[in-house]
Length: 95
Length: 490
Image 1 (cartoon, each protein chain N blue to C red):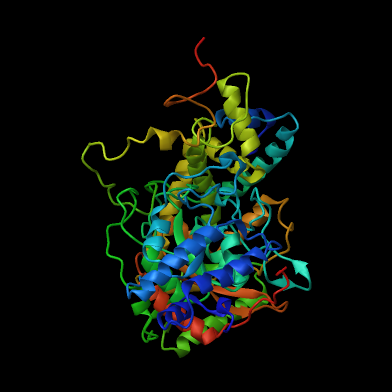
Image 2: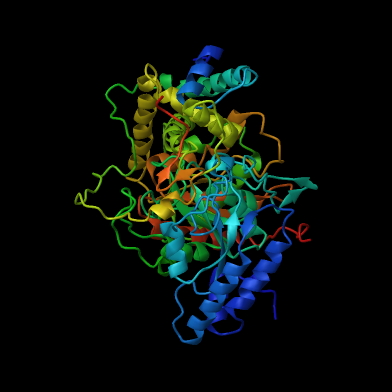
């Protein structure tokens, strides 16, 4: 599978990574090479094989649905690039 | 007094217990070497005040007869572990000057057992790399040199491996997603242990690929690795994949007796173009274990060649999801944009390095509509076939012996332009992560250029005791005692 320049822009947009026009041709080449390598997988017949998402296949532990953590807004906000009172601040979203 | 930085973990523990020196003296000796080691770039942040404070506390504990298992032993911490109040960046610009308000479970376990923190160690950005060249702080230089050429220390835990090899800390924490503990250990003549998935808590470790990431130690000896693992491992409710299982005293498992142990030799690891000296070392390892009473069994892991291609879908897919959190809102370095979407895109463009961008984009692609089944689901199916290969092999053997890497350490800059060439470094290690098994690299010999080479032992899930026992026998037989010549101390 080769990735063309339009696809690079589409993926970058989905991944929210800003690109300059100069970045695009190089990435198209690199991503195509990696996917070309990965294409070996198509040699294998995996019909009926159940996907393995994790080596820890046991059922994930549940717990009671109660609050076990929290109450320290100051710590949570301590590394925020911008904050306002007890809130993270972002550029205006709704006009 | 002898040079205290010559001691391994077990020797330093015993010296402290006999009061031959103090924890403060031990920490000072290491801090002095750390502060003179900028040519290696192994530490991205030294914490001498913290080290002195912790060492003084250790001396009090020792004096009052309350020494804990790692009391007063100075270690370095990979910058992927969150350390409360101490800058943690995963060596990425996007984390800016992030100061964690909490401590990772693994490091907390180490401090609870008395270990002393020397500082934070360099790594590939978000642990994505096999050479420690993708760090925002620049490349780490391997203490070992060949013909005067500067070499990589392996990656992603290159700061950890370089620090232990250069005696800038008696041991170090590290993490392994596709080989990031074992490959750098092999490149630096150190021991690197990746435990079973679920053995050490992932809580507070910057996530790369959550179904593959596992913390472990890099040390000078197998005994030291056993000591470190005994403290690092725990059951932790805050990590949903942490396994509720008692932590044995791994050091007690080192009996030296492997009579009757069945050692599997996977035929598929005889790859094309493998250097003759690695092939030879592997055979030597087989002979050593046989001489110690082990039984050698040929086994087949037929899907081995598909492990790297599967990994390069699964790990990037998980990374693209995990790294979505770096959006310039809650922490890290933000870049301004014309609107919020542009702010995200500019923040991530400026904050991520080239390799991280490549992997996030591959992962995004593999998870996107229309490609999900062909790439992501396919890779997960292959992952099951790889895991089943091991299950079948373990019907006839107890551990597996392989080389750790297909080459010795390579020159800085050699593979930077070719991501695929770089990925091939993990050909012998990545299967272990996909199957969630424990693996350990042991320094076993030198190549023609005088560079260390490693052998890898792979165990059964939660078979660390058996694995470490076999590793110590191999270590003893190899008798590796070479050290890099100190050219870096300023």
